[in-house]
Structures are given as structure tokens and as C-alpha cells.
Length: 222
Image 1: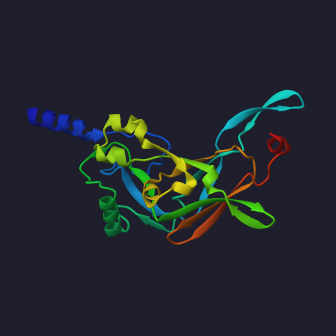
Image 2: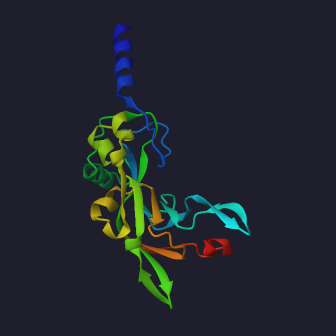
Image 3: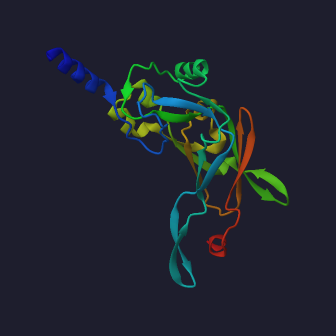
């Protein structure tokens, strides 16, 4: 009996919970030994505006979506290539090594989905039917989980402000692409309202995603 109690206590100490957003859990009812329990190479993205502002329309205040703040999500459910402990197992363990996970922790919930194979991001506007690169005018913000893994999933590391990476889109490196989570945020630095086109290159495909394709008149004026 005493031995069983000690084993139970040890297992409780071993268990850790996820408490961070914005991430996507995999549907694993058994829990996971890995922070990232699913790796996938995206072949499409989704996204939209990511904030609100108050503007004047005909002398009256109106709350509208901010046309200079966006987000994109990497879609795991449409990925053609997925790696887990049960599916494409050998490649999965290659990724666990690349992301410095040892599998020595038991999480109550299933682990997180991790996009991989991201090569480049660029933002464009169209002028006279030509695409103009405006990546230097776009700020990128994302949450970097390398600090969590390096500190063995401690609660303090999950709350550490150093996890928040903010830099120009034109300054992104291979390291940034490696640690992108399933959601990435963008903001136009000089707040110019326009129709923007995000170009993303993955290992196996290139995609374009539009922001503000159909701007309302009040957005265009403010």
C-alpha cells in the first residue's frame, strides 16, 4: 500500500499541464511525453484581421476591425504529411531531436501540433499590376517555445516575456521559421491601410494569402 502511494505521488510530480495559448492540442486522450506530439508540413494557411479600432463615420464613433493587424494559422488538418509517435515514427523522432525533446515528461493533455518545413514569408502590395515587397514595413510577433523546452517545461519559462519574439518580417531567419507556432501575428508598422498579399514558401508548396481584399470605404478613409 505504501509503495503504491509513493508511486502515485511520483507520477503526480511527473505530470505537467499545458497552459499556453494560442496553440492547438492534438487529440490524444492518453496524454503525451512531448510538448510537440505532432509535426506537420502545411500546404495551406488561413487568417484574417486580428484587432479592432474606433473610427469616426459621419461624425459618430464606430468600432471596426483594424485593417493593419493580421494573423495567419497553419492548418494541420489539411496537411499531406504528418509525423507522430504512431505515424511516420522514424521522422517524428528526428524532429524530437531537432527540437531538443527527450520524452522524459508526461503531460496530462495531448501535446501541441508543430508546423515544420517553413522556408520564407514575404508581404506584398500590388501597384500597377506589379507586386511590391513591403516586408520591411511589417512587424511579426510569435511565441517561441524553445525557452520552455530548454527549461524542462517549467511554469516560469511558460510565462517568461522572453518567449515573445517581435521583429520585422524582412529580418526573419531560419531560426524564426523553425520555431513558428500554429499562429503568427502581423502589424503594418506605418499603419498604411491597403490590400496586402502574404507569400509563404513551404517545403512542398508555395501559397499566397490576401489580407483586406475587400476593404470597406470607412477602412480606406481611416
